Length: 627
Image (cartoon, rainbow, N blue to C red; front, side):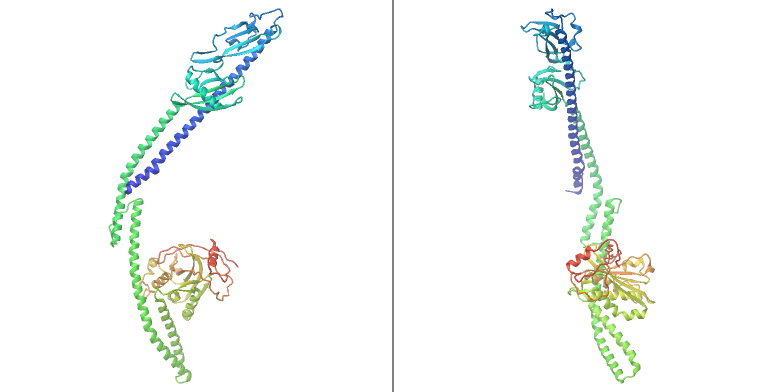
């Protein structure tokens, strides 16, 4: 699959599909919200109708009690209740009754108001309802008789509303029969009765409400019920969510169509734009193939704005680094030749030096015996010291040029510095350069080729001497730190002089072989020192400086060896803790990380595996001196 198709597919998966899923989830949540809102509205309607029915039936009972009391208190001679003054005893609701009658125990009746209907259930004006009767026993002269008031339930239920208002049904809970419905659809009445019976459960209490749903006429219907105690009726409110849900579905469909059209048009635009951008990627791919074939100067597309322009520039920089690395490989080959030549010359020089040294020693003995004049003693001693120094330098060159495949050994970095300082001590004194050794690192054991590292130290010390021909100082200090790449403990040697420093324009070239600013210099000293440190898994850095008058500071970094050394005698009770790696660029271009620390006591087992962990654990972000 091409990059263009992958990006378009990714756009569909990450942009269009989430929008469609969001639309579906929103539709589902909106449908649930509408459903719950409708159910709540139905419950409020059912409760309101039930409360209104309870109030009306209570008022009817009160009016009927008053009527029964009035009839019972008529004069004792009256056998039949009169109807002349009946209107004065009828309350507001009894006046609206379908009939009022008095029945005797023998079955005879007397209608006092209205007309007794011949049916108990009827459908009229689009509403169907039953006959609700309320009776009271009479006392006094009319003892044994009962007065009964009858009402059509649809006259008691206020079922008028808007076209979207819920449908109302009232069921006699005790008998399970319908007493009122605001419609005459018997099939719907039966469906509501079945659904409300299932929603009511086996028992109910006054004021209890409940919700239910059922299928009717190919669609869903929602209902809510409320129970009243007197009379024991259940009021049911029913409504269909079809119109509301249909509007919601139309809105969701329109949203889905909009998302699909938007996604398709955006994907088409993406396809056109990506086609323009991927041309640069194709050209970069072709350039990479040419580089793989050895062509280090291929044609590259012109950099533009945006990420692809940045990619082109990054590719160009990478190609520059490849050229630089190839140049370094060539330089390393030259250094190898120079090293072999140095080893050959050192071997050739060492043998004549041995003969010269032996003859000078013989002359010194003759001078001591008086065979040679005494004034020759001082020149002989000076010559012997210089021959000894030259012999030591030749030995250092031989060790520096040893094969990289030779085994490394654990050595004390501090001891190597002290030995190098002892070799060059007379030169420091003669030149007036103060040598300050601040070897405070808590651990200094490194796994290296000691001759190579000693040669590096000598080279850096000699460079400091040559940079200060009229005197000055060289401060050599050691400190522990953490490798920014591996996180392991390393020890760094800082060589800080007070010379003229390194000019910023040549900072990036001082480690190149045969590059030098000294008159008569060879330009291989720093290059071979850097190469020697890399062969021992170390690095050589030049610390950045804001002013060339502040001198220069070279830092040699080597990893600590997991080794438990025999503590060498020291008059220091406390040693310096973790310092900081340089942030300048060395031959490898790596960046350092500042890790200041604190002074720590040095146990004898510091460089054991547990000791290494202790060194790292004691590192912290702020520098602190402990007295």
